[in-house]
Amino acid sequence: MIGAGSAGIAAARAVQSSNRSVLVLEAMDRTGGRCWTDTSLGVPYEPGAQFISQAQSLNTVLYPIAKQLGIDTVDGAVFPPVFFDLATGTKSSDLEQADFAATFGLANTALLAYGLSITLGEPDLSAHQVIAGAGLANADYVKLVEQICVSVVDTGDPADQSVEDLYNFGQFSPLPFFYPPNDSLFVPSGYGALLSRLAEGLPIQISSPVQSITYGGNTVGVKTAAGATYQAKAVIVTASVNVLKAGSIAFSPALPAAYTTALSGITMGHAYKALLKFNGEPFVNASLGVKAGKMANLVPLVDGTTPTFFANYLADMNPGAGPFLMIACEGEDALSFEALAPSAAGKQICTMLEPTFPGITAAWTGEILASTWQSNPYTLGCISYAKPGKASARLELAKPINNQVWFAGEACSVHSHSQVHGAWASGTDAGFAALAAIGALSAKPAPAP
Image (spheres, rainbow, N blue to C red):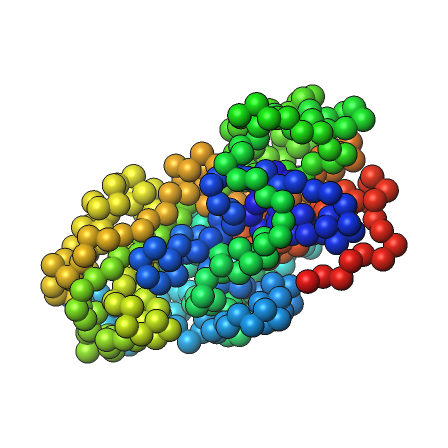
């Protein structure tokens, strides 16, 4: 297995269940891929995935696993967004919120309706084209709506996001604002921590980036950047699509044209998260209903892209840990923040919120954790999305090569791309498919832990 994220862990567990040998080579110095939990500031911070989504709509397999392990989840709907004016720190008026809700409802309906029409033969378009075609090009808050309907789902660019690809996910989990009730579940202890538990007992070799894969003979050869070589009957590659497109792993022979074409139809969007620690109780605002010790989900109501702010982050679940602020943003905003040094990003974030929470700049301890998905050479982006007309590329990428090489990960999932459980299911499928291809499926698989 190349990669110890969700797909690699799932594939390795599938192989182990049939009592066959497996080795997982991970480029980074940790497991989890784009889903990991950092507790170095005192509360679980996740620069990547943190919600178990599609729990009801698609019976997400990782939800019952979490429950079996005794891991608590919280319905994401209990953190509804509070829309506010970033310049004044006051709550947006009912009329402003109604204008936003109207645009949101019309845009979301247009995307779902056109997605259905694609299944009946209409050509695929970009999300922006469909929203504009519905007469919403100049609607109130349309840019913020595009961010919530598209970029929040998979970090996709509305101007370059396939509606078919979006519909394949959204038909099961349409997003009324942020969290479908009882369908997107927050993991207070950390989604990455759950994956770490599922990686326990697997033969994982970290800090082992793979340099090349040679296939076509009796075995598959794998060589790491450090010069170590391995032979196997099959290999499952879970590297991100942008890493594959960058040629970070050389294939010999070169990948067939169908796979390079599939990769060209998928790209990765950008997302940024940061966690800041503060002294005192700086996050109190009566106008917004923000109280000390209670987490609030704050969204500036603007006609443009904007970060989301989580004030008193996890304060309800971690009393006494101190006040924290987490922000999340997508697209160009994400690139702009990631380009800054963490200390500079922290200062900018505090300056943005100073009118809302006077004194937070002085209250900031200077401690910050920030994501680096775009600059990380082992990710080169955050989440995959398909370009218009290219949604089927995910299916093409999931096909085996010579019954020796499989690709797996969220980019290979049709209905759960951008999701940890989509990667998990893809890895499980690839693991059992590889076992079947080499005649290694046992008659009675070992019971799952």
